Amino acid sequence: MSVLDAAGERSHLLLGGIRLFNGATALLVPELVVRRLGADPDASPSAVYPLRMFGVRTVVLGAELLLGAPETRRRSLELGVLVHASDTASVALGGLRGQLPPRTAALLTGVSTLNTALAVLGTRAARRSRPRWRLRS
Image 1 (cartoon, helix red, strand yellow):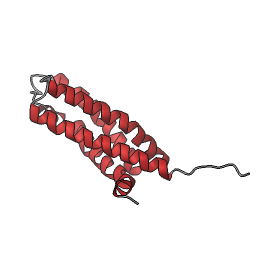
Image 2 (cartoon, one colour; image 1 turned 90 degrees about the vertical axis):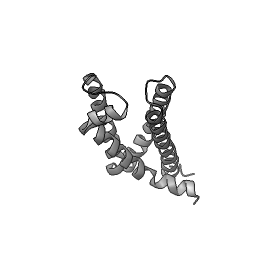
Image 3 (tube, one colour; image 1 turned 135 degrees about the vertical axis):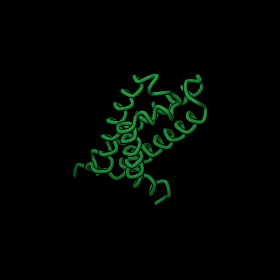
Image 4 (tube, one colour; image 1 turned 45 degrees about the vertical axis):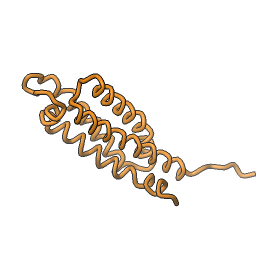
C-alpha cells in the first residue's frame, strides 16, 4: 500500500475533524470568524448569519465523516470534493479581488485546498474498497 493509499484510508478522520472544528467555530462564535475575515461584526451584523449557516453545513458534513456508515462517508467525501473545491475558488477569488486581507485569503485558500485534497484522496480510497459484484458464469 502506497503512502497516498494509506493517507486516503484515514483522510475522512482528518477532514471530519477539520470540518467539526471549523463548523463549530462558525456556528458558536461567528463574530470571531468575522473579525478574522477582516470585518467588524458590530458594523456588519449581517455577516454573522451566513457564517452560522456555513457552520451547520460543516458540522453535519464532519459528523458524517466521523460517525457515518461507510457508504455515508463515501458520499460525503464525494460531495466534499465539490464543496471544498468551490470553497477554494471562492476564497482565492475573494483574495485576488481584495475582498479579504491577503494573509487571511492565503490561509483560507490553503485550508480549503487541503480539504479538497483530503476529499479526493478519501474518495479514491473509498472507491477502491467498495465491493464489486460480479455475475457468476
